[in-house]
Image (cartoon, rainbow, N blue to C red):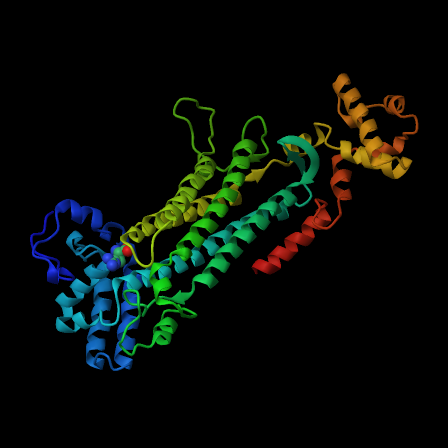
Length: 463
Ligand code: ARG
């Protein structure tokens, strides 16, 4: 669409309108219409302040503020016709306001620029997303806590290098993710605190000669204070990068849990059964129940970290202050936010619905010589052996069991004494997985009692 008329908003010095390609590369209305609510909130606060300061009349402010609400309801009900020729959400809203109220609409942009306008809109949007993400994280933490409560003392193999290491409890494993997500939430909370300064009133870049009250608009929009440097205020996108950085780490955590669910739900593991609601079938193999949601969550880190990288690259080397490059900020954050919210919701559904298979977990926990460390510890405690020697003796016992094709508790006392003469029948007490986990009572350890302490702590924290 080529518009031959020069632009009504900034076309004073232009004889002709933009080329169609120019319009296509320049316009952001295709995506920044998502900022409509924030744009109108910001404009309404600005208009009220202009009137309060005697910069526009109370009547004009009233017409502007009411007209903006009409525009918002038109947008919300899908009646609004967005125009590419009007570039972005800011000019689309203002042009419609002019249709509705006439001349006073032209006074709204006094002491303001699209540079501080877009900065305030995008901050408000990102702030609301941070709150939504934190809520999504809390819901997932609750789902994990419920799993932890059910299986606080269920034993499963703990892995290092994805090799059986030591028995742990299901509750303990679930709580590991509760901890990760707790840090994720705190990263978003930190970012929110840091970003909560209002750029409104920075105008194009230098501030304004009008007697504006930046504290008033900051307060009206829920900011803690106005941003203290106008150049920084219009050119800062750290809040978006903070969001994407926190989102990347959170998505990375989700990908790890997703990967475990993929492994655990396989026929080879059978640690968990995913619900039908969060699984899919195969069009050719009737027996298949696939963990597609988990796989897609595992993949989301790709686009979310991609968005983080993309925006860092956009911002890299930009001279102060605003450059149009910065219009490329929004799609990255929108996409990352949408996908993180979806991933959190899907993970919450999957975790709430899944059933851990207690018997399979326990069977796996008892295999792979998982209590070898318990045996070594017994040698240290009972025979006063240095740990390094105990490690060596235990290694010989593991080798013996391996040769015999059995697990450690299946060795006879004779077998054991053949390796070390002082071993007594008492040793069998520590070779069972339940005794093993129950003994790990150090703070933060896997013993069911410790797990229950941590469950209570989290329940209080999230209450
Ligand atoms: N659509 C623009 C953006 O998203 C709004 C700010 C435009 N400012 C300007 N000086 N051209 O960044």
